[in-house]
Image (tube, rainbow, N blue to C red; front, side, top):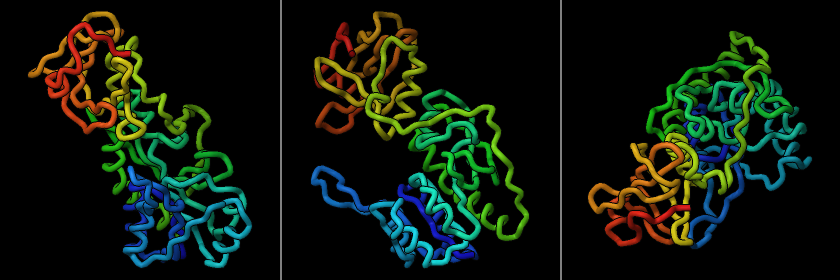
Length: 307
């Protein structure tokens, strides 16, 4: 089967590699344009571009997915199928290009967590089980007919980033099996239920801000769910701090007040219910450090208030 692969981030790379190693022919890899990155803001290629080049697969980067020229370019490749992993919403013009349609790998048990950030919101919500779904793309976001699904447990301390890394390879296997099944005629797509639909929109910076009036367990989950991006953050003395790791501990006090600031035992902050131990923090413009090192630096004391 002639397949055009579409994807951009690290999560999509194992799927591209698995398809390239399968019996199917990956005729091109479509990915986002190079973007400025780092302090120098130099253009950097997306991970899928680097992986495709290493595999000797043609790379296509379009500035406009909706344009007729993009559709014409892809039609010329005569694809049987588009395989889509962590990519943009495809316009109707592109959905009509492949002979057998498009298959998407989505890291949730659809119809739960439709949207751009399913793993992040699952972790933020504190659920203990999620999964992976392959489905046929339709005009509605993540609403097409389901092909295969697998359940996955979420680790009690696992971050969204760690979960994405862990699921990327079994997800790649699920994608290949789905495409094999379509080619062999052994898979029967089934419509998604409209019961249990939930949304997982792209995270913005404000999604990472911690509200100390909430229970510590909720903040712990938000720290995990926004790691690595956009990152959980708080304010102390007018300065923003990122929180990379935390833990729930007993504690009572006004929300946001520092209860413990110890050079050995670290930093604990009162929440609406319980307290949060800040295990790894990052002051603005500085590197990551553990909470105890932050206290030893003299930047915080018992009674200070985080906002």
